[in-house]
Length: 315
Ligand SMILES: C[S@@+](CC[C@H](N)C(=O)[O-])C[C@H]1O[C@@H](n2cnc3c(N)ncnc32)[C@H](O)[C@@H]1O
Image (tube, rainbow, N blue to C red; front, side, top):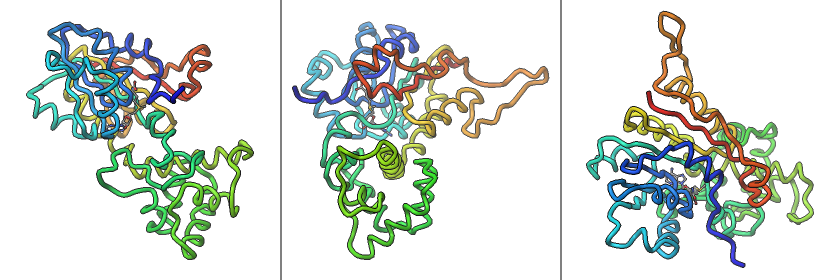
């Protein structure tokens, strides 16, 4: 059996959280394999509209074969936008949409990214150190590993991987790249663990964890994932109608903390403002506070284990 492009996490819970108005205008900021989009679209009436974003052209190519019905000429209510979701406001202007009824962002990368060796997202496969979600441009993980100063590498590893050994890791990489450029996933994995070669299959769990966090940190830096998320949260808040909902699925504590604080305080700094009576001033009512997958879902889709669903409603 071929590996699926993606299996959507918390599908039922996300749909419940969005509480879709059939005639509303919705945005799926992260189309991926289209599972969430297809389900959202299924709840819309002929008056409803769905705009789905993805910055990876592979997502569009795959969607056209998996969901030909969405792209059929008689369904102009579905629009695929091949773009970074950070440009949500500009795209909504372009399509003359002044307000939306709901937005979903299922953050991070898809199974397709992790499972395709030549995309370079995973230390489980030998491949080029790329990690760009959109291979049309921008810096690769190899660019970062070979050009950032030791201090900047350590900052990336510490901030985005929360790796306590960020400094020695950066030092090892800088030393190794003086011999030859670090261009492959297997090369980086071996250097990070201070080995010449690695057998990934027999790696101890703690060492696997270090590599997972190191690769996560690089991926976040390559794709400016947190910067894009910040911009999305601000634009979505502006665009959402009163009563409209925003649902975000996060996969690690950095993005989860950002979304949690934003929903609570209504600003990126997470600074809570209070009125004269001590009530918190926020544009949102919290609907879901970090719902996780059921044990049954995790059993059938282990990658759903780290997913956390947060939903807020615009007041
Ligand atoms: C976890 S997958 C989404 C899976 C999807 N919900 C499904 O049901 O198949 C995340 C997708 O979002 C895309 N993505 C991540 N960050 C993005 C961004 N800033 N702008 C646009 N797409 C992004 C990735 O390319 C990836 O395809």
